[in-house]
Length: 249
Image (cartoon, rainbow, N blue to C red; front, top):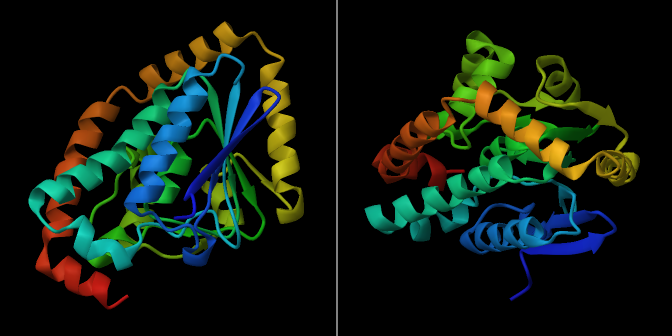
């Protein structure tokens, strides 16, 4: 089976590419497991200073692959394991001693958008489209965004984005603070590489300590938020109404 995630080393940067372009890089168990493995390898590699997360093809990631819903929700235990695997990516990104850059283009949806929000710097191509579809299916968000996003954009905007689930463009992401910077799609990966080199020029220990201090201080309720999300997401996946809506997608 073709690798769902491909990683490569380029100087101080490890590039981690979501690689299911035929499904707009939608999240299935293979992709999530391979992403976890790639992040772990980059974390263990002393020469890696920055991790750049990006997507192959027409999208960064179109969110949870609903064609795998039956496998993901075959039992409560399977559902719990699936949600915990998704949440583990958040913990890997946010607890990493490396800076993680998200280079986002095309569709960035649901769980993938939540991973992007976990990243330290978020470069959005000008053709990016993003939204939170979960509540529309009767599901729930992950990635700690009930805490992280609320602190970044305020409670009212967070509720608007997550409850209404409307589709937005790259400019909106910049306006509300989800995107760090907008660039032309053709320049996206070059700009990510430049940013990675700029970060790598700084002392590694100081950079890692700054990331840790900011994340621990600003996101002090992350663990509690993620525990609530995990419970609510498992319940949502197992809901007959949510499963029926997802199958209609």
